[in-house]
Length: 572
Image 1: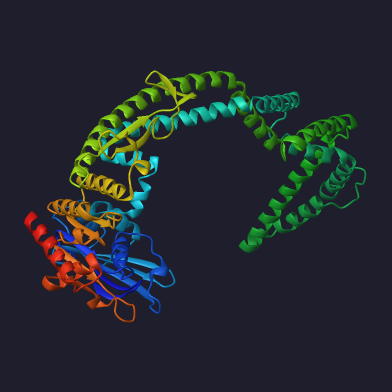
Image 2: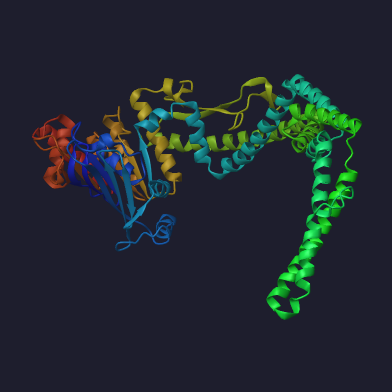
């Protein structure tokens, strides 16, 4: 990795060994920035506070060697990434304003893609994980993770049944608790539907009646106007001397008809005047019929207004017009059918809830059984690791228990509380020596013992994680002496099958590393390219001496450092 302008690091290159790399340095020298840099390359959160003061941005670049055909490599190539001599180049930039960019194989990619690949590339185990594992929920998650498919399969089936049960129970509770409100709603709907049914409105009837009322209310005026118009067009029988439009048009037609043969243009005009005469006769006839049919009937007008009042009463309550009223009626009828079916629905939901409860109980039993079987294997594996970490008499076990709850589900012949992950409460117990009762690890272990238990758990996880690289960030805190030597030996053993990177303050651990990197500041408090260097020979002895005694030139510390290195080499 190349790290620029990140925290105390100005510009530095970190070269990791294919086997076991130990990162050491004085407190505050910037060792944690190595972990932070790797986290950024793996899609971690970009914090602008990490950008070195005075710099516009922080940049982390990494070169990752992957086996041919690795799923992470395939996914990267699908995203358009190109390889560099078989390796994948990754970079992450964080600006001082908080903007973040990611590149993979020379292509700009979403940061989420880096996080997606991270699960297959690196497993990070740090002090935060230690503290998290003290929580019961994390201990259950750890057990489930270790168990793999043996638990994930039953857990998936349980989770789906739990989701269905919660949905059915919520619907049933909603119907039962709102029964009174729903009964009131049904009564209102019945009243409205009855009121509409009593009137029996037709679609568009309100518009038709409005037009008829307008016509009946002005019948005399309409009849007079139609009669006058008819007289103007066709003449008035009572005034035979009067001149009307039809007579005038007929005279014009006769005048032209006599000479039309002499000019085609005039013949065309003669035909058009003839058409006008025909149209006038048609309109005059329709006006005569309109005037004779129009009846100023006060009784009919009263009936129309009465009907309109009934329709208006409906539109005030149920819609802007009769069309909207009819739509409300259709929706109200459908809703009333739904409400009237509540009793039947309650019965159906109750039966479904009870059946799902039985199914969930059976799945919970299967899940508990799978966890118990996995817990025995997990505890045995962690106990074996503790024997390699200078705790030969310690025993780890799991307490998998359930809590009685009358409102729970029946599982294993008891009615117990349940949740989205089952009915089990999982707690990791430790008996540090023979005769000691198993106690929760937070209470039954000293600081050093707790670190070793957690490291043992992490190492067991490392054996089940299908990733090529493991990063341990000071998980050896609180440990010293012989236990520290055993931790170093165990990490070296793990590094035979995977790449292991350890940020440590323990010389006993660093001595077992295939490569030791020293992070040190310059006089101005920054870490430059020369501030991260590979220690070999005399330089490594001096650093181990400093870690042992705080004195690089102490003869006793040097002798001890050389002895540690010799012990580590003898293990190879």
